[in-house]
Image (cartoon, rainbow, N blue to C red; front, side, top):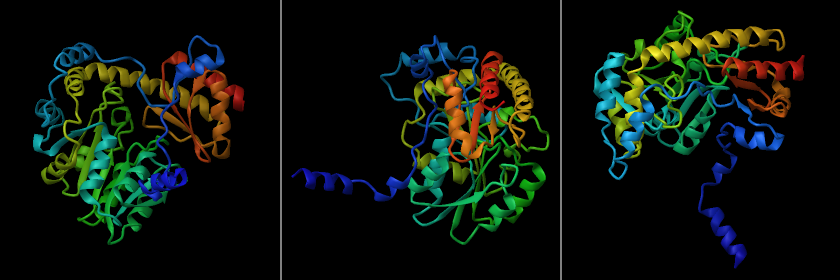
Length: 366
């Protein structure tokens, strides 16, 4: 009887998911601190901004929670209008979701049938292959170029008559590299009109290179959609809120397939409060950028080939040493994000946190 039950349990889920990697969240700093007997550990693994919620967010969320027995506005009308006004687009071109990653998933559901192809650079955001597989789409992974960025010419060449969607992560997670305007122009001109190009700009607010274009400048193209998140620069990672801007028919399709009421009442209230704090966001981003430059300069003396970052993290191309380096950092109370065989992503924290990371790096590699 037990054997039959075990066999039945196996048949209840898709066999192809066994080969799918799990999404790996950043490790709990409280757990590491307990293991090491430290008062606290430093978490630089999840690309969070370290400065706490923006002014007014906690109060807005607390007020919203008083109505938690009611469903949120499923149309997300007030927030979509606020986003439309901030970014200079019509509200019917905006859709919201549980972070930009959920919107990427909804876009795949809205564009791809089983066997259709989803093209993206690799290594890029680790959720992309998971999104493709769970939607029944076929992943087409195009290797990063020698500078750890997108090879857009190769991505354009990978398009076939089965390609339905292309993801361009700009800046790229986890390498921090960014695509510049001239190459993106050439790429978009080369992509067929019936292929949706999704520019994933989760880290747009940290970009300082003037040659890296704002994806919204391309949003009038019929086959371009732009993803943004409020989890990073806007400090709402715990509330899970993102949005996209696309042509009305694409945004409407996403709103049709999105899980009903998935943009929670608290998330909507927190997002509206955060959007009123643009000046403070700019100030915080400037602090992150200054530390990113300082940390990046120090790392170039320790790790060959560290690419310039346009995000709120840096990439160490350590290859087969990545996991060992991650463990060495953890032994000193600093949690980073190794990608086995490729490299290590390290979030920019406070100056004190960054100093601790640099000391751990010096000890491990110096």
